[in-house]
Image (tube, rainbow, N blue to C red; front, top):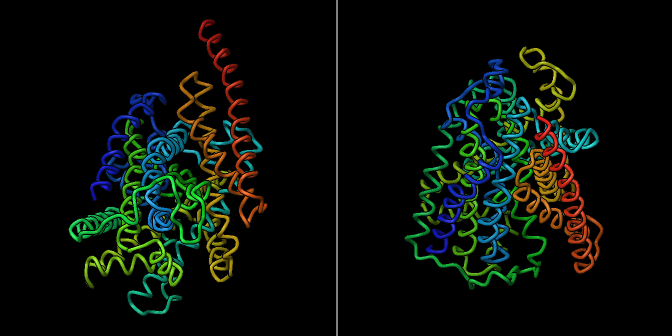
Length: 476
């Protein structure tokens, strides 16, 4: 547990140090009028208190990813804890901060519009399609996962919960953001916070230790899967996740002051990292070996781990509440996934969303499609989610780097993690069975080489952008 608390302390220190550095580099301006006031419509754009915006942001981005991902990541060994800390501070936090702040500077625009502003119209169109497909998959999965967990708790037929969750998602998608999401999220957040802290305390006083060793350089995965690049795809939401960039614009429309951005966006990523650390530590210490953890996952998916651990550590009542706390995460990401999809489609087709009828015009066919997808076997498609998620994060980081280069600011804080993630996603898709099935050595050479070439091209362009900016400053 000392290792766990050291990792938590590192994340908190990262927020106050590197997070502040990122904020200063971006140039958050308290005097700028935010979209919450400039475009207030009483539906999607409205000023909300800082604490509430931050609460909503945490629940928006923290689906099953920071629980299931770290549990699966624990199979690789303690290196999972290292990646959560480094990834959150230097990649995930930067990604989330810029996806939110660039949306604020872009009148609360969705992520395809933000990326398009910096990477061009082809990237905008590709991101529109890419984001809608990704969000639909996420929305549907975040119906099925909590429905199955609720069935395990109550014995009620899963289909009943599917219909109930879809019904809630529909209301959360079309009603003003303060009517449903703004009211229930603080309550759900409190449940999550209490049960998460209770799990940590139970683990701490239960005498559990991280096994089998503290070697962070060697994979202990029972299936002999290598750390590179698989860990960085598997353990996504706990360290960096492209899905977050589709959610940040929701709160970018509600932030009162640009100075709140560090707490709302960077801070939410740090909190998700702490959740990820908890469940990675559970995976590393509750079970006596990676093989034992793998057996439970194979028998019932990571949700079986959540159920077993919660009941063992907290007893029947505490375990029940803990599982409810976990159920909160996918539900509070699924509803905003559909809401984000509605807004992306509305922006793409220039349909105002101030009137209920126009919101229904998009939402009704959207949910009909979502329900149809939920009845299909799309296991193969879902395997691409990890790759797609990290590829989206990579594009957002490159967009942030372009923004900083145009402003003649320190673009390295964005282009370095963008370069690393480029190497990860290219290497992964080349060697994966769902990709090109190449050997890991060749895949790594091509992946790292591609990332290096892109970095060199970017720096070359950035130097030119800085020269132009300097010339403009001298002319003024």
